[in-house]
Amino acid sequence: MIGADSLAFVTSPVGDQAFRILLVSIGIITLCAVAFVGASVVLRARNNRIARRWAKLEARWDPVMLDVLSGTAPVDALEVLVGPEEGRRFVEYLMRYARRIRGAERVLITGLAGPHLYLVSGDLANGNVERRARAAQMLGELGPVRYRSDLFAALDDRAPLVVMIAAVALSRHYRAADVLQLIQSVNRLSLLTNRMLVSMFQRLGPESAWAFRQTLADRAQSPKLRSVAAKVLAAFNDQDATAIAAAVAEEADDVDLRVATLQVLERVGSVEHLPLARQLVKDPVAAVRGSAIKILGKLGGEEDVPILVDALEDPVSWVAIHAAEGLRRAGRGVLEAVAEVRQRRSSMVAREMLFQDDG
Image (cartoon, rainbow, N blue to C red; front, side):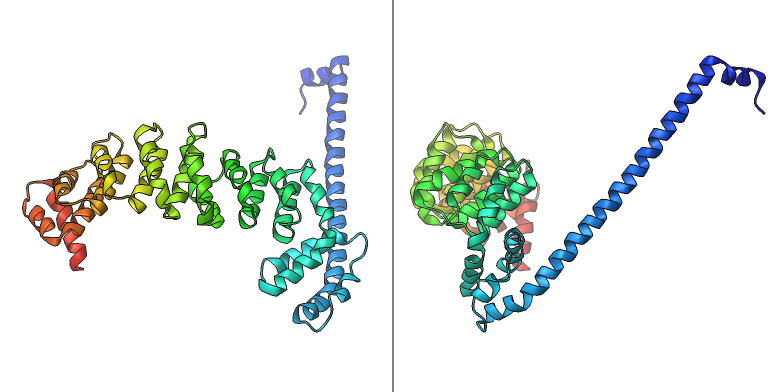
């Protein structure tokens, strides 16, 4: 039951005003809910209409596309089926084929897309990031040569996703004079790991190594960019990069950069780089010590065996394992001798390496 005090409040001027406010609030919330439901219904109906429309288009294109790809119908037979307002959708339709086919059929697909790509290129200036990214993807797949300048302009896009897609497309189709611009786009690709960037830049091929050497030697570049350059040079097994890599390994402060340059020396270094490696086996950074040990294990001689034996006592286990791998290259007898000294931690590492060999 409503108490007398509550009833008095409701029937008072203040209570009456509060009650009216409550009713108005409920009404507004109800109207918003109805509007939301109505908008959802309208949007769903619109999307269904669009889906049905595109399904009809694709049902019209599919049989002719298969005939064109098989060579039983001319290209014109498909082009006449694309209406004036259907060009953008036709490009999206062709993208599905472009991802799955290669060779002469792929050339045919890009030829079909050519007359309609201008409709897509304008999206590179769209305010929506997804639209710009999609445009860069389609131009990169279906018109990388013709729209090369547009893709290079996209390297300056404020969205890293757009930059990444444009860079990947350009890494497949580039000119020597443009390599540096493509490399420097890394500074805007913070969302990608170094490994992903190296994989992308390896597509440029060893003929682009000059640009990566120049980037590695340039102190004005970011450590991330120089690290990526060093890793690419290591992947290229670029002999001409060793002098630059050795100099950077000595003077750089960034750990990732130092380790990346040591990877170059591990891949293509020579005995002239052993003094640097011997110096770095005492470095306070485990990653640097490990890289130096790997160089000694690969390039070192008998005089480096004691250094490798001492490294078996390294507090970081994987550094000790690199030392054991180097000693294994020096000969099984060295590992057996170390394994017999049971009071040292190094004997356990040596025994594990011998066990792997026996296994």
